[in-house]
Image (cartoon, rainbow, N blue to C red; front, side, top):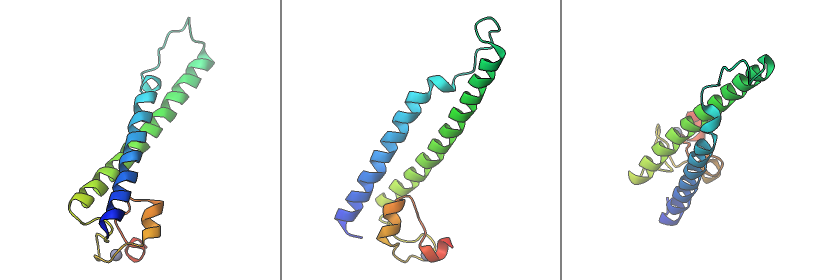
Length: 111
Ligand SMILES: [Zn+2]
């Protein structure tokens, strides 16, 4: 893969990493334990709050999983393995990397 292409994908990965970290920071407040104060929060809104929190936690887990994949992709860039299938060593189609630059397998090996 050409240096310019590597730079392009590294940039994509770093931008996405930044986005995910920003989202994670922005939602930290919403993931705090829900106050169980009977007087200020009614039973229904407390359930709402718990549901909201569960949703936020699920989103955070997805973000963390994606951040891990981005880390792996960045390591593969540093080791000049990026763009090549981790299984067969063939070049991964660029269109495939455009959709998801964290992909580490060619279409054949992923199937
Ligand atoms: Zn392969």
